[in-house]
Image (cartoon, rainbow, N blue to C red):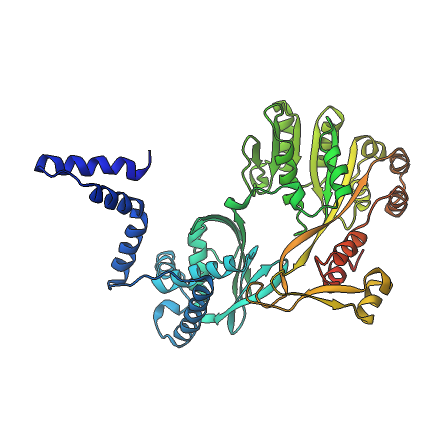
Length: 487
């Protein structure tokens, strides 16, 4: 029963004893009032907080953005010219720091910076103090961009506010700290991981933004080529074996793993993960937070969950010999195991495991597939234009003009922040185990030989996938070179 359905009978009960029969018009008005009650209450709270008669109007997205820019322009000089004690650094007492972090201007400033970052779809916010300024930068589509430069005198207040929200030791400035902030803005429920690091000019604070309301990712939406998607989906339905996702930090490995688990999740299987940290909570899956400080490492967590009778295991990252050994042993004893490694390409994962001390015959016996991946920025569809490819671009891409006579680039618009890009898409390279590749691994062959054999058997490399996405108008020559230069 809705709120309005419950409330209308109450109106009737209040009126009927007074001999008043509620009319149809009154009931309709009451229903309308009840439906709008949350909005009415919010407006009343705003008027009370501002102690003024506030008028409300419906504004377009562009008007709201314009007002936010105006507010930013108004706020910066106020802070710059303020002589108030709340902006002066040097507080050492915990109570004074807490009071400083609770001042209304600081709260408004931090909330405003959060809103700016979310408006840009940023994945991280960096608060970086230097001798003169406090720079606030965001990572948007993998690229750092500065959104604010504030006077250094408010650094202590801002850092204290962030530490207070993350429930960290507000007076500890000499040691790194880690925490979390639960933050709601509009309909979005955010989980922000907070890391502080002492520096010469004060504490650097970095927030990783995780949107709990944006966790439903499907494999088909990641940008895998059809042939790779088909192969990968075939691999993840195997009853046992190990599948590795490789790439540098920020290449979307965790997103791929979560999309994979969502794909295979069912009541017929028990899936357990051990992660550091648990970024998103998945229904129907048991997720364990690794915590090395209390002895719950990846290896220890993996050793424990094997005794929980799982069908599928996911290990956030293989970092050492012990974790690798237990993961491989689990794959060999009837479990399907997923994990990640930091390597440049798929073949490099074999060398990485060998460097950890894992025997070649164990690697060849347990591995089903290795997928390497990267992320490139997408061309903004609102300002995209088709241009002929230049001679310089052909030279740096090492292709002929006939292979890609024209490219698509973004001119820059308000939707993409004048960058020409909005969002990212994955590049993929899937190495599927064959008898020949297993033989090379078992005999200790290096990564180049394994890579060459995989290409002979039809593997599409990351560079080739990048060029295909360039030809399809999804990204630009600059992005292809930036992301695949070292491959």
